[in-house]
Length: 522
Image (cartoon, rainbow, N blue to C red; front, side, top):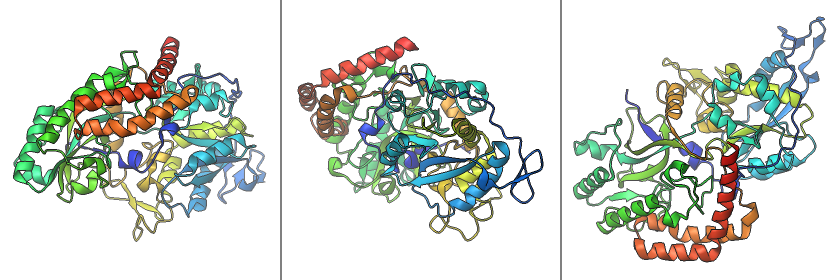
């Protein structure tokens, strides 16, 4: 079976993060809140009645054990969380002498709720950090310094995570979070209509890197063959393509970028970035040839619906990784134009930390470790209870239990948005994913090009006014220029002039200062 690729809809589409959410500083202050990282494994044994029996044979009800509170978000069903927790807590009671209490929150309100919990009095212990300013939280003393805990047994995490991704969660050398085990790299590719390519007799070679000239010829042939279709449609709505191989330090408005996968060490205006300019010039030619959706800047329909419906031939995508596009009912091929790479913010966009005001920091870290490394717990967190919420298919994959659908399931996190959980690979492969998905993804990331600024994420706090003004300019021109729907040269000059008037030089100087400080500490 060939490995194919698809857009990370669950990770990049289901979660709407504003630019401010993604802006975390490259550095921050060490608040010195490390725990003593003592061994917190419980000596208790699990009794046959589901209670915990201590060494002296006195029965202890799980209700008497310390409760570790965890906050995370989901868009899935979680009505049966109490039942799932009960199964998880049987394991935790034996392993660490504590129980877990999960609070699920909706995606739209999660950031605000996390802010409140981290400033409250012991309202949360373990917290999912979704694009939050890690350095700012650490500098404000809101997150526990995990360094000493981690140093006791780094191998348990290194089994799943490359050390470079873990180190991305350090501030001034101290560790404040553990990255989620997800994909850390993405490639840039073209989703091409499978039915049309097959009908035209074109072979989709997954192993090659396609040139822009080759893609042009494919689109031209498709438009000539099917004159009523769109040749190229945007990646998302009116957003033609997010980025190429320039790093933005987590700044989704690209106010200052570092070329060549972030390796140059120099922050420049995106209007001076050669890759952005050349891609835009190419798209302008394609647009004038009628190969690109002419009203693409007012588009609201997703490529993922237009391509299967036969309305469009292809779309560029800057966020793809190995997944389920290898199935027989695939509606599109994926043609790689640039190999996968890990951007600076790849490991701090989704991670887990512990609140500095946790009343049980030792137990909290012990539980957090189990959430990453204990396979039984990981499967419970992802899929719920086997036989009730999910079943194992003949192919050895997890699927909804008999009579259960994703709509009526009482627990569907692993099928809807598994990416919200600590370790997405220490679980049964989903029935929707390619065979050997975990190994595919680990190999994929291991061979990725890594940003020269890996772990440095921009904090706009010191330049809030200038940055906000630049974002407003960005929204007017960035995607429009990339789509080819505006004259490249004249619009680039207008874009550049308005960015400078908005204070781009100030923002770039601040971003450069943060990058220099980060690189000096490496």
